[in-house]
Image (cartoon, rainbow, N blue to C red; front, side):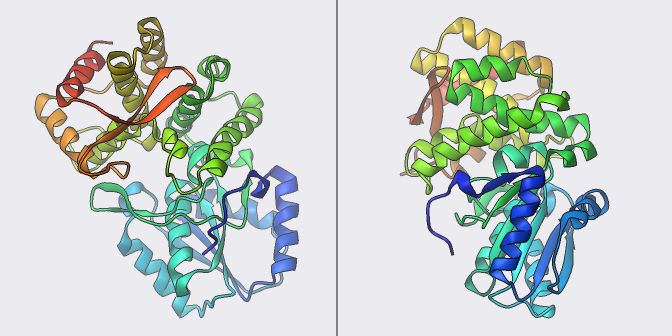
Length: 356
């Protein structure tokens, strides 16, 4: 596996990205190329990709089912078996064409097949463009627990083409916007002000926003590729957000939330905790809560829901020595990590969330 620090130099955009991809294929000369898609990207994105794909090497397409519920070891086994049956070897290349499920799972499959083959990420959702495909995190869920199995391994390159976003629903675009808003809260107030007034459906300015968001994440990852310190700040909103997402996935009576929708709820909750523990300004809490609520609404959680959500947090990857570690804010652009939150404050955070 590639254990070198991530580099923004490996992220390419639009037409120049396809040129760089084709140059890479000529230079690297993979023995075979495999394109991993899900049922959605097979139908909506593959033909566009192939129009730009210049290659004389034998190429096969492997399809998986779309959706977070298929981001598991069983799906990995299916892809590993397909690679084996199609005679992939250690010089083969896997191209992951899809959203976060495809890039996370595909990166993990590539990192473990024959102890590691090269892979490239071509994200097709806003969420995967600004978050999942960049930074080298790969992995799958374990039951209803998010991203419990995986490795950090950098792709050979990431190719971001915003034209794929035309295939997405407004709900999926809003899901991606949540990670952009998160980058604003942890990076600096001017960027937050810019993106919090930005319509997620305004495609004319989207390329600029995507690049800025990728740069924020990429600069953090370059300083801490294996998440020992500052990279933890990218998990803002994710301690409670992941627990909410996992809970809703396994409770059919609850509305199924996309990743970004759950993270949006997590950001309101964790901004409230920031006010209580780190002195985050109350006026900014109110404004942030209103902005996020207006975009995503707010979900209803009963006492029993909150208990189960709280119990799921003990499986969070940031935890150490039995402590649940949060990322909180002292102010916009001033995140702190490894913060332990008293249990009674979690209930108060949900009380606040229910009333906004």
